[in-house]
Image (cartoon, rainbow over all chains, first blue to last red; front, side, top):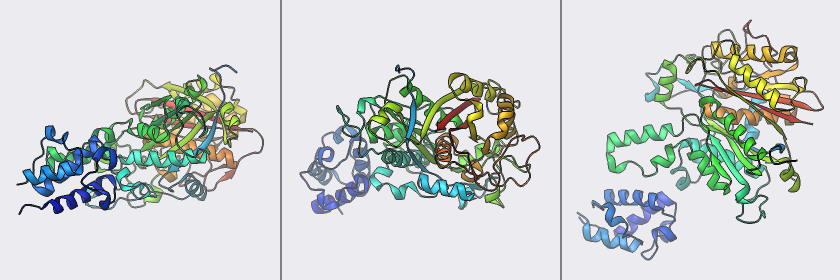
Length: 82
Length: 423
């Protein structure tokens, strides 16, 4: 069963917490991974791989660069999840 | 004083070792003659001929925040912990500033030289397991920065904001000492005023242990781990692998005086040479080691009769321990008789590239406290060891101006000797 928008946001928050140590409540739709959440380009790859596993979605490298904010990632996963 | 002849001093020390999570606890354990060697538990070690090692007393992953630790190889974790301790011990309260020296040093005048013998070997091996078991996509994007041998140096450089240069000499078990020697030259030649320098290693894993064991370099005394590392003893049968890091803050004497820093001792300099004999065997007469010692005496104002203590390489291998003593006798003659020699690997195990760092910290503290730590497990001194080994218990060192030498040698035939002196 596909995840809801809320479930995806919650899942991403847990992933970002695990990887960057940011409290889950601070992982909000408008936050930038790089500027607000201490997720550099290498850690972003980890976030993507963890999200792919969790939400059964493929996020090609070319699409990763468009995922600037948490909201971008939530919308992408919502649209592409299996 | 010109820029190529500046006096270099030690103003900070830090360590995380099999004996303790910092320099103080490590020193206390050294004085107490405690062994850090333990049995290696777990299925992955069951088939190995060597099932003992000296693991770090404090797990670095418990010291560093998880988001930091997960991006660092264990060797870089050790280096960062020891460097933070040394940095703070030197009286610095934050990273170097960009343009002024409000913190005590300007970033452009600060260097970092941290070495390891093998680099991020456990990262490499663990990620290969991930590749085989979980596939390409799961290989960590942090793998390269974690496994590169300059990773610890680069991370320490980032931590303190070092911009004068960040370097990583690699010479197997001489790496840590070579790093300190390199740092001394950076200051002496005017490239930097302050350099964070040392060695680190984290190689306790079945593959390095199998490989060293197959070279017949390691002790197989699995039944009595605390007795396994026994330099100079007739029953010695190889080294015991240890892990951890030792780091010092080196500084030009002038710079240290200007900011009112506490000075542990002076670093007189280094003597270097290469055996050019065999890729892994020590040259049995100690010819290369003797050359390094002579180079040290010729390039510094160290007088042999000032030397009261020597932290020997002494890994507990049958050949190496004796070759080192032969070289010392050859170069120092009768002066060797008043030098209290300590083989601290009897307690810490052999930290490979970390050894030169940890043993420099031990040498500096020996001068500072005027006490030579013991060499444990010398129950039956080898007849070929014609020198004054500090056996069993720590020994006081004389008052007045005293000097000490720290020896480190590495596979490949690298010889590094460092000298320190205090008033």
